[in-house]
Length: 329
Image 1 (spheres, rainbow, N blue to C red):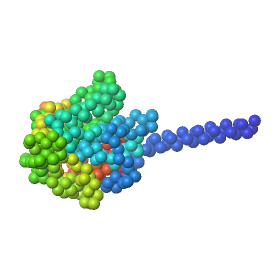
Image 2 (image 1 turned 135 degrees about the horizontal axis):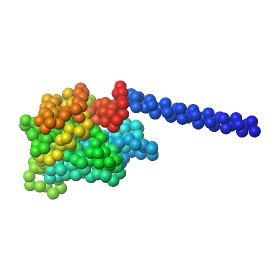
Image 3 (image 1 turned 60 degrees about the vertical axis):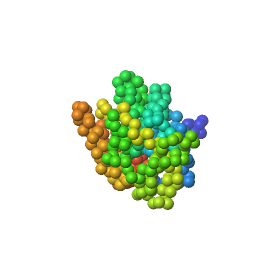
Image 4 (image 1 turned 90 degrees about the vertical axis):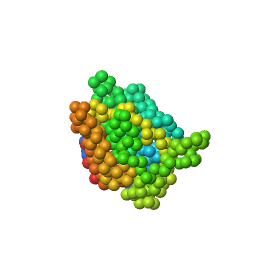
């Protein structure tokens, strides 16, 4: 009898101890600093399929992070970032944009891919989403959100929606304008392929652009030996996406929270162009009588690829956009 009582007491004590540990860890987790990661994914980091999502604990309610890569790049861009987010129980999705490597009619073909995924996540699964858009991906993400914002769905008493959008040295293109309109002239490092050698059907006019000196343009703040594998993955870009006009912009009402990371050492989209786009967006909001408090701007001393050289900082912005309080070391 006495042994039975002691055993029951020990079981209750262990249960209380485990509950206490769980509560303390739940309180402290949002404030744990995110360590700096290596500049490139290490061999131990798995290469993630573009459409593979993470497997967080069954009870997770964290938003899905939808990542939109830039021109010439592929979903592999996000592998290190996704692995870090997965370890924090965030599901992720990184679709491939067809304009990287394939002939498309306009940037709307890329938007269709992102819109399809957003509708599945939000309309079919009632999930919350944080968008992360890099470079050209800013135009794609901006054009895919209309009607799926979390604030709008909440007003309609519906669940899910886009909570926040993070732009990483991305193009902010107003309605009626194209990516090509955001710069004064075509960049000298844009090389048009006269032979269309990447197209099986060999169209009669050149349709693809290649980046000359990609290390200096995309990875100028990264050691060349570390950027070499990423350069090898670059794809030709269908030039039609640079001249097609925007028909939507997610900041039109000034109600969807956004963060813009200005990369001060960027050689692809110079800092002056980034700053001008941000100011033009703010000025447009003021002209429409819309506030500008929805847009937060952060400046980081890095090149065009913060997903490679500033992983911890980008992860911190993503977790903040998802509603966490994060201290980034």
